Image 1 (cartoon, one colour):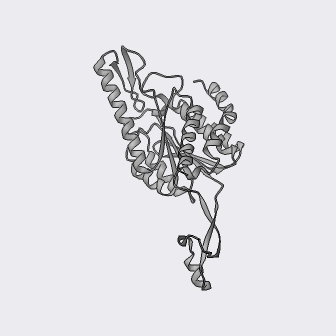
Image 2 (cartoon, rainbow, N blue to C red):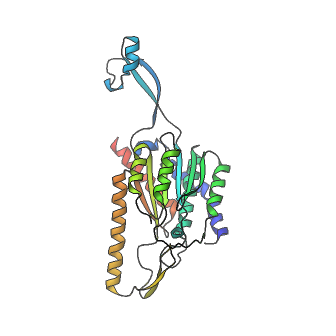
Image 3 (cartoon, one colour):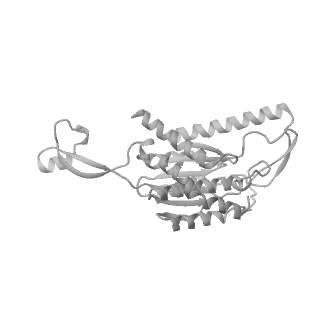
Length: 302
């Protein structure tokens, strides 16, 4: 997609993002993950019927009578987006679709950012490849979000071929987020997950924060039967593949399903919720459905 066309699409997102904001941030989104975001408010005298687990033993010992801790809901949510800007995000492995993986990731980043603005939340971002390339500390407001989006737009069509095939360093970005965030936050990782050895760092991050993994991918089906060109998005190496052969298509489908299942299992073990987003999908609809289903699951458990 041309940069000017992509920018026009992004400038229309604040209106669309209201629907995502209602599902994502209204009604205590934190509860969808690991419980309500609560912070200590005060201590008061114990009353019959209070949960004994809420007794503040230090205060009780100091005053010689039982006190319980009182909490209030923490309304402000900090959102940190980890955006993969590596070469594989620019092209994908199949001939160019309408959107590249990075352009779909950029639209998703803008949607989540504008949704945060709609409910007056803080949003920040790390742009990463082999290491963290740029940091936007969390702030509120349209000016901050537009600066973030415009900076991300500069990575569109970035061309930096590699000699290695290791992909982006997701682990480095996850470690950086752990060091950077001082209180419980929502971390959104947007990547094609062409990377290795990130699972442990995601698990560590999930222990202290709520994490969403969004995997941007090419459509799983081959575009047409016949001889097609496949390209390694990191190194630029190309091969011609016989997509007309039934055996090749079966092996392709098996590889795709195996990779998806492995990624989902890794996310589950880490404690992150996850969404696979194709470059052919409508990002606003997909995100509204994703956050809406999480909200409904939580409400059904109450």
